[in-house]
Amino acid sequence: MARSAVANSNIAGPRPPSFLSRATLAAELDIGESTVDDLVKRGVLPRPIRIGGSVRWNWAAVQEALISMGQGNDGADPFMKALNDEAAA
Image (cartoon, rainbow, N blue to C red):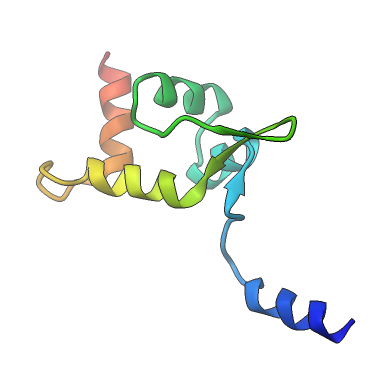
């Protein structure tokens, strides 16, 4: 019993889970679920994986994709750039 309490205390804190549902990813990025789908189709966000019957996004891969988008755009926020590009399309 003490072992699981220690393990749980190692992961506590203000961070998203390692593998997020569409709804959680959308909430974390402050966008709608349909926008998540669109950003995946456009290649802005990575494709999800299936874990059992659930569709999940790897948070580390999402962060990496958003950071890599920022390279070469004069330091503009990569997520906002993608949203602005979406609005202009």
